[in-house]
Image (cartoon, rainbow, N blue to C red; front, top):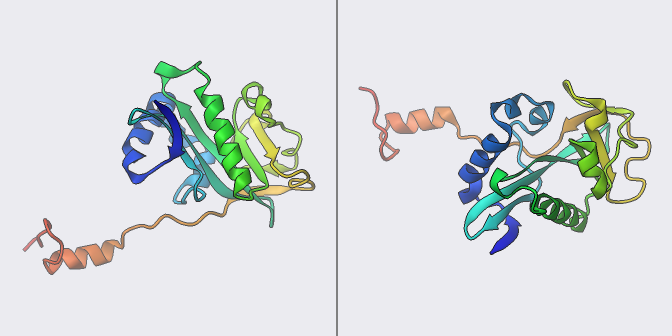
Length: 190
């Protein structure tokens, strides 16, 4: 059975393996990765396609500003397992992401991707002409969709990350705890 559901922590390894299979290590060099780096995805907007317990699709959305004081979401990456591409699963995942984003009150979405593919969902370059990204990208691939009409009217400036920062472990506290023998499995180097 195929379902679209929210990603859980148990899906992280499968998601990363899928993204590696679809995009390879070059995915970490992309400009949009700079916007995601060290940030949490938007609440409720990390989705996977699950086929009988196997992750075969993924998409995540991220909080950004589309210029000063203009909130938006950045979509990506979206990936479908190569063995099941061309079955409409990417479209299914996109429609679900758009619906959930709209249901959560988000007003606009940006992405860098293949314009002919994303046009069918309403994305275009019409609202990105006065926006720019913090790194190299092809202008014809920088697309936007208003989930609420007029949400990007007059948007101009640098797109920047605004989402919550990832929780990182306090390395100093971990080292101190290990030195005191407070962490199971870690011993001090005496």
